[in-house]
Image (cartoon, rainbow, N blue to C red; front, side, top):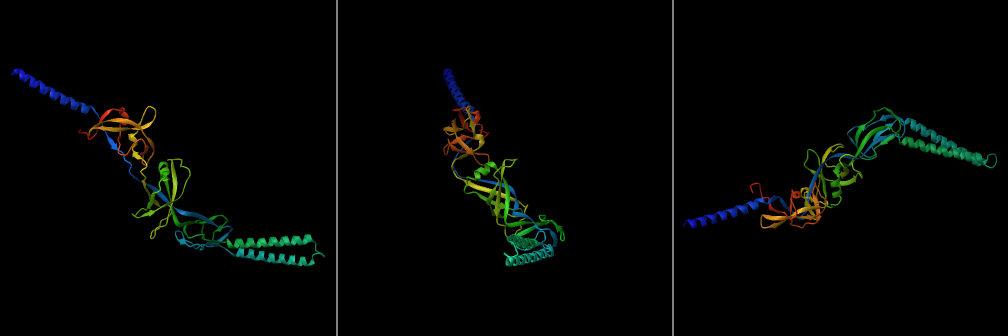
Length: 350
């Protein structure tokens, strides 16, 4: 009987030892956090703070000297194309025009008189000189007419008066800025965009760009008008200028702040992975640790090379090396060996 008891006790101890050994072996497998990759359309959205600009801002100036005697515009008010902005004292210009016309008439009479006497007492040289004087008199008339016309400053387009740079009755020289006006027929919005987003945005056909102004939840569609062909000295960004139609019932002035949202659905031409999943081998090749399951919880990892290109938001787009549905090590892959047995990380309690 004692012998039979010893045998049973030994068998039980062996069984318990085998169970503990198997459990310890399972716990010795390194846990890894995995992600399943897939070729699904990826949406991205970015927001940037921009500033409103006028379609064009112009400093208007007289092209002639004179004293301002009319200055009807007011800062902050709108004016229509062709409306008078300022006018110089016209008397001096009208007198100059009258004088030029009289001199032209006198020169023409001289030419007519000499033509009647040509060949008798008047030489050809004298007649040529008279015709030259008549031509100069005609040019003087045109100059006087031009000066009279430009003594009045009119709005070249529908505009908002930004500032008056001189006062009424000021004597100004030609070229002195008198008033600054803004063309608000279309609002322009300037935004500094990072280089990577600028390059990726040019490849997408379904990019949506909207603007939202402070104090309103309404969004307005934007269109790209132009961009700087060089990056800024700081931040490696490109300045993009967008255009939009001014919203009805709301006055948006140059210098106003605006939030620009850029969103798109990227086509499924690759698989997006985080940078933490990348494992670089000794030769400098880029790859990832692919998980090959053996059962439900265990498996092994295999280093596989991948072809990548920059994605959005710090991600990488895999264009070759992985298939839809593959599982890869999300982080810590550099600490694993090719072919190493691992187990899934399912929580800190396991």
